Image (tube, rainbow, N blue to C red; front, side):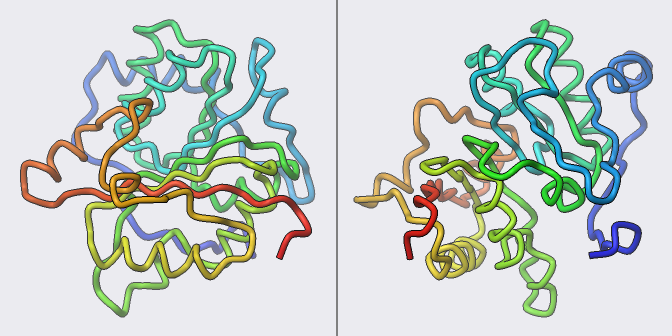
Length: 233
C-alpha cells in the first residue's frame, strides 16, 4: 500500500484550539509522537517508552483520549500506544497526560494503517477500536476500519491470547463487525452470554461519546475477541 496515497476519510481538525492546549501540541506532542516509519522499518513497541513496560496496548482512534488516559493511569506498567489523526483529540489526550503525569503513553498522530505494518509480530497484548465511524451508507462500507485487511494486520502484531476490544452504538455496524471478525480464522469471540456484550466490563471506562449514545437511545455493544494461537485454523 502506497504510504503517500493511502485514502483517509474523516476530520483532521475541529474547533479552534485554546492556547493552553496549543502549548501542549507544540511542546509535549513532539516528545510523545512517533514519526511515520521509514519503508521496511520494524518497531518493537516496548522500546518506545521512557520506562520499561511489561506489555503494550494499542488504541486506534482514541477520540478525546479518556479511555486511553484511564488505561494508562490504571496500568502504569503497561505502555499505551494511541493512534489518532484528529488534532483536537490529540490536544485533549495531552491535557490528561500532563494532568496525571503519565509516562507510559506514546502517540502516532496519523492514520493507524500507516503504522501497523511496521510493528513487530506478536508485540501487542491488547487492541482497542472503540466507536469508530460506522459509515452507515452502503456505498461507504469500504471505509470502515474493520475489514479483512486490517484484521490480518492486527492478527500479525497481536500476541497469542491477546484481546481485541471493539465498541459501537450503530446496530448495522455491530452486525458488520461480527460478520467480519467471526469469518476471520485468527480470532474467537469471548462472549458466552448476552450480558458479555451488552454490559461494559468494569475496566472499560465510559467515554463522552458513549454517554451521548446512551442519552440518545443507542445502546452500545461491547465486543471482546481473543487472538488464537498461531497455526490454529
